[in-house]
Amino acid sequence: MAGKRKRKNAAERRGIHPRNKYSDNPPDFGLLASLYPSFEPFVFYLRDGRPKIDWTDFNATRELTRVLLLHDHGINWWIPDGQLCPTVPNRLNYIHWIEDLLASDVIPTNRADCDVINGFDIGTGTNCIYPLLGASILGWKFVGSDMTDVAIEWANQNVESNPHISHLIEIRKVHLEDDMEESKISQKSSNEGGSECSNMKSEETRSGTKKSCYNGPPVLLGVVKDEEMFDFCMCNPPFFETIEEGGLNPKTSCGGTSEEMVCSGGEHAFITRIIEDSVKLKHTFRWYTSMVGRKLNLNTLVSEIWNVGATVVKTTEFVQGRTSRWGLAWSFLPASRKMLPSHKIEENNLSFMLEGLHRQQSDFDVLKSVESHFSGSGASCKLDSATFNVDITASKDQIDSILKAETHNTVDAAEFNRSNSPNNQQSEPDALRFRISVLQQNPGTLLVRGTLLDRSSSTSGLLSPIFQHLKDVLISKFCTGRGIKL
Image 1: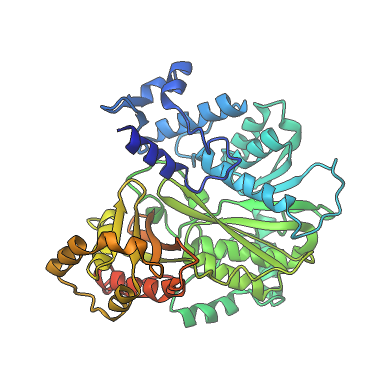
Image 2: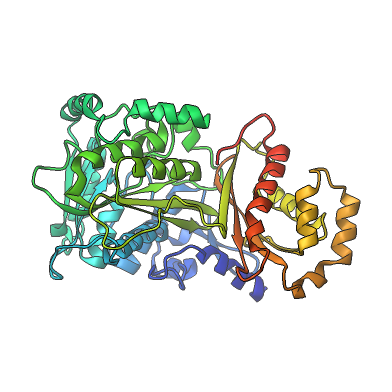
């Protein structure tokens, strides 16, 4: 039991930034329950004694966020019912990644070491989580913007409840009437850089993906004041196009209003508007950044950013449990050293999205299909249900067999090969060793990722065609008539 617990905890920490407070010390629900009576009713214990909470209970997740902010960061915090409730470890990942960007030598800085870092939080919400954490942990100054009265009221209340950092945070109201007029002007004059909606549509027609344009107010133009300068902006964008799409995950309950979670065109359109605004504001920000919820959108947005003349584009992946999010950053300042375009996919780390799965088709079903697919050709497979990984070792002959095989290998053949050959491939010098991971993104959407485990093998270059073949197999089995987004 101890081995399983250790393996599971390692899986949960996968993807957490090394400076994240919870990287090596995940929250201890039992300890928190003993220290905070208001949290105790939400904690229950499994048969093996491990404390858990019900992640589908909004009151439980909100109280967990409250006690974590108070216990670990000295922050007093609360939000009203129904508002988006952030997870603290995930938000810290984003904060520390921006800290890495600012500390790197990719984009030079003219600031003195004693100058305070200035950040801009787009859509800070009632929770105001990024300004509170950034100011508390790193002493950064923030402007947090939002357009709803409830967000402005509660964000201000959360700031005022923490007088030790309140002088570092300004909450700024987006005035809709002024911004809608600015939006009309922006639509007419945004030909500069080529990221306007008309160009977006032509690109989407070629990719076969239909997306809508963002029709709301600008997110930076009209909100950033003349002569203001910032080191970065950050954003947890509205990921969805409808509130129904945003509320489908039966495994979690983080709340969220339509203003926080939904916009026309979803996250792609919203972040495209940030890109359009960044073209006009250029050096007003040292780094422009945003969270991205779908790998498909990440790849498209990276291409759009290069097309508008950015000098540097950086991406990262945040993994929380079995959910992946991505960080996207770009700048128009001159790069201090030559950079490889980050939109080029590394051969040792590939991924694609399976979308449109039925509710009865789970991530574990896909994982078992991956194992069956490779073991059917005699490859050694080790499935870890705790981390949702399959580690595969395949010889050159087995790779050839996989690439030539039809997608309907029989169960008998799979069982025969699994019982006769798995232990022999470990010692083959030219064996291809790689890992397939399956991560849930949203209900009905899975991320499948392939990672090379041994770069020194002479067969390492075959990961890409092997992974492409696997993609075709999984599409055929799970996405027939539904399509796939890459």
